[in-house]
Amino acid sequence: MTTAARLVGWCVVLLGICVTTGDGHYLDSYYCGQDNCYELLGVSRESTKQEIAKSYRQLARKYHPDLHHGAEQKEAAEESFKRIATAYEVLKDEESRNDYNYLLDNPQAYYAHFYRYYRRKAKIDVRLVIVVTISIISCIQYVTRWQRYDTAIKYFMSLPKYRNKAMEMINQSNGGGGGGGGGSGKQGRIKLSKAEQRKEHDEQIRKVIENNMDIQGAYAKPEIKDILWIQLFLLPYTVGRYLWWAGRWVWKFTLLKQPYGREEQLYLIRRYMRLTAVQFDAIEPETVEQFLRQQLWIKSNYDRWKVEQENEKKKQMADNPRYKAYRRYMKNHGPGRLTFEE
Image (cartoon, rainbow, N blue to C red; front, side, top):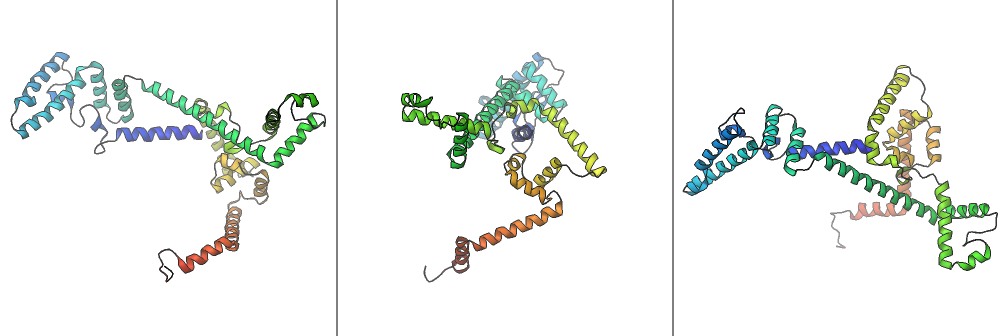
């Protein structure tokens, strides 16, 4: 839900930037700008296609730059000619004229005008562009999540603690024979080179770690439901579920004053810490249990705990030799201070 909501927000911002140009008026880049196309040609909305063409030809002959002399007159005629030509381009085509009439009748429908204008100009359905864009984002998102997960698995494989534990599990599954080299028994190991044995050994360790490690947070194993397309498809369900959750919270804990459950306690702690769900899930389970024992879901307890953590951090920095040297430098030779040594 977070990714989908964020995408919708960015789309609104981008559309707002696109439709707000020039002096800040969204009409400046569309059709005849702030002028009225009908008034520029001296016709009305009831005029026929032939009447519009006739009026354009008359005005084009009148304001054609080649029929005027003098720099100022020529420049003024050229500007008028451009406006007339633009107005005719808008009104001569039935589809463009209908879109322009819709703009005149609904000037506040900014994004509808943006969609209609560029759909016709680019000859590409904006809906197709949106579908392709979301598909590309979904693919990139899924590949990136797999890369993060692979990085986490390789990191755990490099740690002796997890590597040795995986070896113990492999040996137990092989009947305690200490296998894990290459193939079955001595004959299997003879057939494989050292590089192949090492590769097979790493594959076995990786498989054990993948099956037994519960990686949470940003490096968790990706699931198909995490990609943007699925999140957008499930957005109505997600929104409905959130509304039900919010109503349940107000009913149980605001009106009925019922005690918080474990899930509600963790939610309050995460909200006080200003962490996302992914960031909070990445915290060690032992640390989370300690938060619960300290009853940090109570605001006063959390505020006191936060002050203690800040004081502890300051104390650790004060006892740090590097920080002491830095403070000594700032006191004696702080930036912008001249000394005889310089």
